Length: 120
Image 1 (spheres, rainbow, N blue to C red):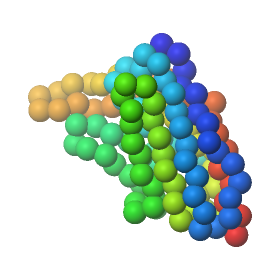
Image 2 (tube, one colour):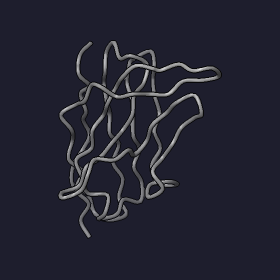
Image 3 (cartoon, rainbow, N blue to C red):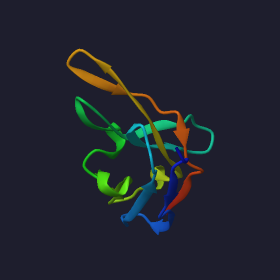
């Protein structure tokens, strides 16, 4: 299983858009997006489990995550970007942990990250 590889970051003006891409061949079943801003802890942006897609409250309505299973690829479309979205964005993969009625995701393989900078 190779580590995920992210791409698509860059610098954009407030209100602009970016689309991140993550390729992760042989991932264990879970793929998700996380981010870490300077001086802050890394947190989930968009993850998926048997309960469905979950987004951080701060990005709801602006970010959309989608997955192409045939290509082992995960996308993050980011619209209406704000300066507070500035961070290193990471893609992570990992196995599913099944329980009666569903599954949860754990993430044990991380990409190098792609920088997103939103200028005011």
